[in-house]
Structure formats: C-alpha cells, structure tokens
Image (cartoon, rainbow, N blue to C red; front, side, top):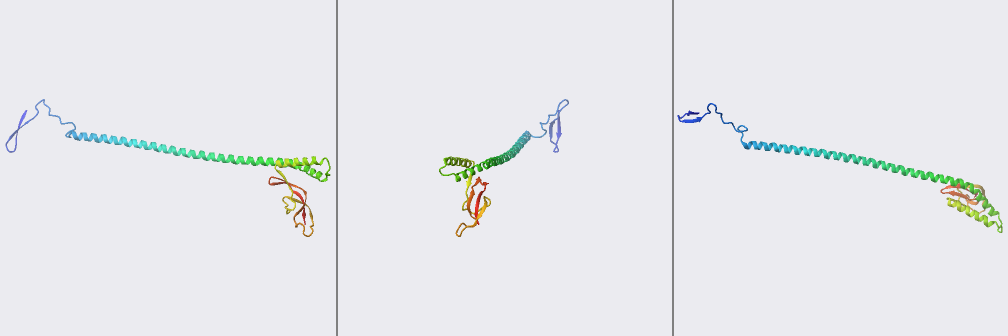
Length: 216
C-alpha cells in the first residue's frame, strides 16, 4: 500500500506502508548497535577472561611456592633438632667414655696398690738379707736376682721406689723416724741424712713414704 505525504512546501512524496497481512522489516540483531561494537565487546570479555585465568594461575603458583617454603623451613628445623640431639648424644657418650676410663684406671690402681702393699714387706726382707749376707755367701747372687726381678715387676705395674737422701724433708712423702745432730759444716737442718726404708710411688701418688732420719 502506498501513501502520499504532502510536505510543507506543497510537494508530494510516496511512502510505502505494510498492508494487511504484511510485516514490517525486523531491526538488525542487537538493536540499533553496529556489528563492529559487538565484536569489540566480545573481545573485551575474552580478554577479561584470560586476565582472570592468568591471575588465578599466579595465585595458585604463589600458594604452592609458599607451601614449599613452609616445608623447607620445617625440614630445616627438624634438621637442626636432629643435629642438636646428635651433638648431645656424642657429648654424653664422650663423658661416659672418659668416666669409664677414669673408673677403670682407678680400679686398676687400687688393685695394683693392694698387691704392692703385700709384696713390699717381702722386698724389704730381701734388702735386709742382702745387707746382712757375707760377700762369699753362695745364696747372695740368688737373693739379688730375686730382688731385681721383684722390683722390675713392680716397675712394670707403675710402682717406682725413691730414696730421698740429701733432700729437704717433705712430710707429704717422707716419714721421719728420728733426728740427728749435725757437726759443724754438716748437713743443713731439715735435710734427710739417712734413709731407713725406701719409699714407693704409684703414678703421682705415694704408695709408701720413705722412712728417714732428719738433720736437727
């Protein structure tokens, strides 16, 4: 159907209008928006989705890295604890070893000391026999040999004799049995002028003090 419009200046123009049963043409998709604008919006949405995905991935990586660091810190702490425990155990074992060694040495010294105290009187009797024996006595050589062997056995056990003749009197290692007046020019007062019986040491300790005569 055609309609005639009359303009202000009196001219005519034709305009087609849909007749009965006819439909007006449908507007373009998206309303009146051009196709270019729709493509731009779709691209923006895709970019936002990519940016969101990247942000999510970075957050996951950061959480994973933080978890790894926590695990490393935990492992380092456990390592330090195990190291400290090993050092304490080693120190305890070293102290135990030293204590056992000291106790063993002390027990050994007590045993040697006890045995030596039983043997020293016999050694003293051998010394007296040598002093009293005549030089032509056939048993003299045998007695000397026994005395030498006995003293060597004591020395192997760490026991040594000492004779402090001419030394200043020391009550920690000497036992004074008498004093003796000295002539002018003789030994100084407090000096050992005669030894009745040798002393014996076991290591740094005195097993038996020397019995001596001291100058008055």
